[in-house]
Image (cartoon, rainbow, N blue to C red):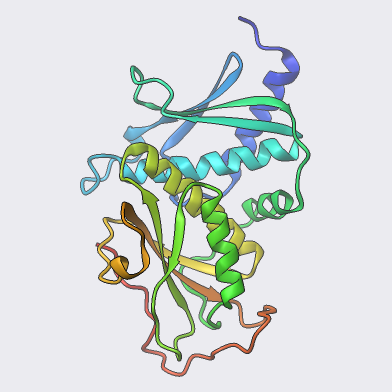
Length: 253
């Protein structure tokens, strides 16, 4: 089966755009392959095989993040991207396929998120900032919900200049890891567009407060700490940081 030149050119252009965008790993543990009618996302375990992650959970998270970049790039070119996760049980290294189906009218939010893919993610927490307003946290929660995950703000002290939150999925399978990766990437890009820096850890999560915020069946995937840029328009009086020793990023177990 031959691929029309125009479609293949679009697919190759999308692959380049998605590869250039930032993801949650410095090392790309995935690779794209253009095949007739599809773009395949393959795991590249040789590039990312940490001893503490034999199941490849981090690899799936990173690959899910790359999928978001690919979808956003497709939207800019006017393509609807149809994604299938883990489409072939006989080829477990194929984590997802993306089919360009029909025309898509790009939204303002997709333009903002795509612009965010052209910027590097901030390294760690910002030195100065304020606790994000509830409306901003709700917007980030909606970004996670659109990818099949949930964002749960965690209790904190009033004087903290950041807000902790937990990203969860329904289940803990490779497919859910891919969804968590997509949700995390969309959340990171949404945070960049809203002047929110996001510090995160995604090792096996053990959070005492999880039973108080999550619903039955939800599995913690990523711990986040959100800090709003001090010069951003918060929409409410910010709570300034009073104790430099508080609000540090907690270790995720």
